[in-house]
Image 1 (cartoon, rainbow, N blue to C red):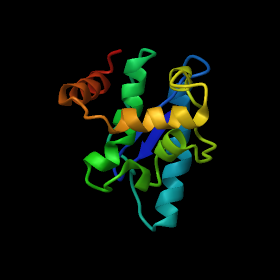
Image 2: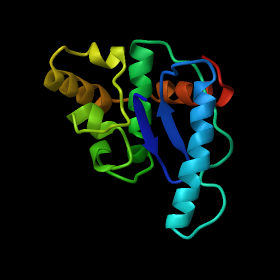
Image 3: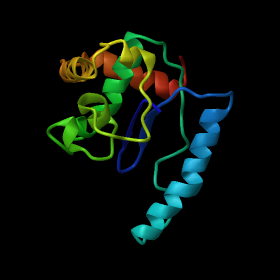
Length: 149
């Protein structure tokens, strides 16, 4: 998993599967383990997220890094935080600040930002905080909804 954010009614995950069908198995396992845990812990019932999961292929390079950004800016766009680093249920602090997160494995496109980890994190923070073209975010949403590469 390269990037993620857990929102109140949905989750975004950017991952590279190790085998065919692995994404479906991960999502099934997440639904079978995480949802009952949250329901038990917070004394609730029912589904945690809206609808079934959707997936789409992402090309390496800029497209992939734009997906990183799209995912990690979700709490900011939902007006839940003023800075993506303030949201604790996201990969942003790992990718932008180097905080330990055992869930995150950096993608080669992320690693290519710089050989030096501190410079890489700075480059990533700069990328994330660049003004996002609204058509870029909409294109990502449409590709996921239609499940197109």
